[in-house]
Length: 471
Image (cartoon, rainbow, N blue to C red; front, side):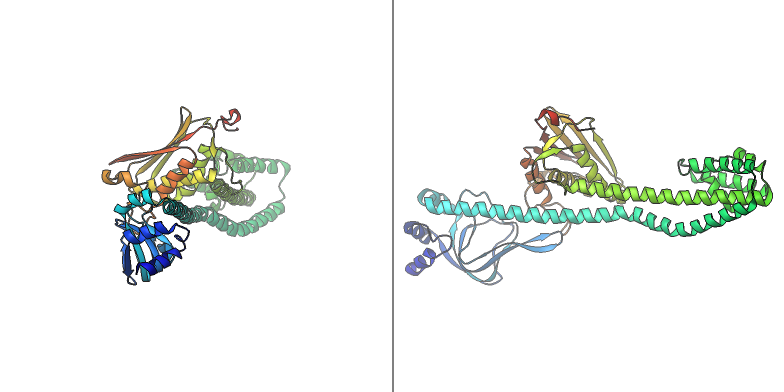
């Protein structure tokens, strides 16, 4: 048995280049195991009992993500898994399952210190495997978390775009009918043959009505009172009362109408005010379309700033305040849906930091999104950015139930989540921690019932010309 096992391990993809005596050490201290298809080699609760050298077969790890179950790692004959030298791993992120009948050799955890002392080349090979495995996990769940963030971004953007897009469609549909009304009113006005003085009086009313359209905001009761007042005036002067609603939306007064009534009366006054009302309606629709289109433009600019999709992948000056504003433009709909109040306070003239804007926006997105998830309906989230010595400190504070004390030390661990199954990947805060560290920053959390505070500190950009944002 030992002879054939020595031959098999000598041809093992990972151990093949290791000196013969170190392979013999593995045979002496390891245990040959036969694992049936479907059996769990290591449950996700742990512990990982040792180093596994896969001779043949197929092992996998599946993890529950927000979008469902996903394979994150697999091993076949010639691969190595389990605890590596110097590894602090206690439990895998998911069950390690044999997809088919698998044969492996396990060197148990308690024998690893001796292996490190006695088998230098083998240890070096396994350390490289551990580094590659960490790199694979990092790139894999960074990608997955970015996809989750992209999904949230798309959902938030779709919600935000819905209102202005609907307004544009509604106003554009009404615009054709209003244009016809304006043309009819203009023809009737031309046929009335007004004198120069009458046209001057009409123009003065038109200027008052169109100059302040949609500038004032009145309560429904105030608006109804104005409509009733104008309707009574119009009826008294023999004018169609249907124009009362349009006139009530403007800043025109009864005194101004009395001025035009002094030079026009009867059918001529009716034609003149119908023309004014048609112009008011047309102006209102065009203004609504302009405002809605501006909102769409602002949202696209916010998304562009959030993703930094037009920037190179090199460190550059980053405006923290603008990044927070772009993030809130995307997450604003979620806050409104839950009736959550959000306060954003950014210290004036906040210096730049140097880094990757898109990555920092992902930090703010994850922290703020978690805060919105944590609070109850009608709760409150406070976001503050301020200078603190040579760093910029960003605080995300919510008044939710808090993080239980017994799990606060684990919230930055990969795949750990306090959310319900299917609601979180358990990767968001680990990604946040990694991205903050990538920017030479620090992240801390303090939590108790009714207040959870995440604090991110990032070093201020050192170049003098980056000390303050451009106006």
